[in-house]
Length: 338
Ligand code: NAD
Ligand code: UFG
View 1 (cartoon, rainbow, N blue to C red):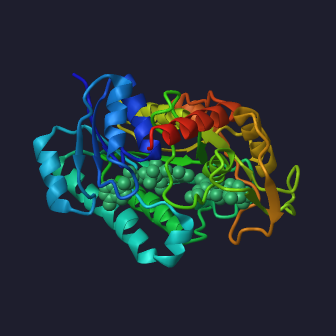
View 2: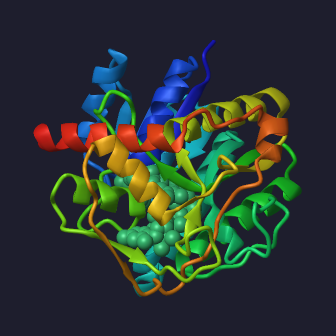
């Protein structure tokens, strides 16, 4: 019988792509989302892509009564937990909201799962737990250091999950540290959909390419990198989705937890990303060097051997694929008013 997976935050950017990968792998998936950072029509779009109805339920991971009813009504084998707040800048201004959703919400969810006897989770963590890493590519064994409240919530989540597994070996959790997710599904029906001014590079470039913003501000050109601009390990969101399928399969098969980076192992500078996007969009992308953004790290790049050896994971998509699919999504979402 097919396993049933509860996908929290499944209407969001990464969750919606992971939904497609999980359905493709044969899982029955139930999306749970409160749509605080996503649009309800993502559910219809997922149905258009798969050609099947999408099981979903609207609600909040902080609501224990609601979660208990979900677990009473469905036999859930595992949870893939994406639901969280994710803006670094906002977390500095509103730390309590981040602790409430990302830490409190996780504690509530784990309590309900424990009571229901569902003890398998894939957890969304982030390269941000490395703070300013001592070495790049960065291995999973590198020290965890919080640079902001958002990063603290991911460290707290990881540590709680580690203590939980230590206290009860029947728990098994896959902790996945994503590097920089980018790109969109080939259909052009789902993609990154930030509210207001994008904080992240790729969606900002997309808005310049489509003519919504005049130019890209490049945050600093005095880092010790190939061209002085910040370097990141961009990973296609479809590859991330596939990584979740592998992590889940490993958990269900072995009953053992794991911790892995999900990246490509290859970094690109801001100027290299702008050049790749300009190729994809077939236009010039005006940009200007400005001061460094406070708190930015010069280089983030993943060691990928643990994900490869443990999960059989290897990112398949290139930076050009990420830019082309982002551009396709940007154009189609503008034309159909998403
Ligand atoms: P997103 O905001 O697009 O998706 C998160 C989803 O969770 C949204 O649909 C939102 O409505 C939902 N949600 C938030 N709070 C909720 C709550 N209390 N109850 C129910 N649903 C709630 O973000 P994303 O980029 O898809 O990120 C998914 C996960 O991956 C997050 O945990 C994030 O911290 C992590 N992550 C993201 C990145 C990135 O750059 N996008 C990098 C590393 C890790
Ligand atoms: N950048 C610009 N101009 C912009 C936006 C970004 O030059 O308008 C630069 C940044 O300085 C950095 C690079 O582009 O060098 C990437 O910046 P992003 O904001 O896209 O990504 P970050 O690596 O800073 O942060 C993201 C998430 C974090 C997460 C981290 C690692 O926002 O939550 O990836 O996974 F922790």
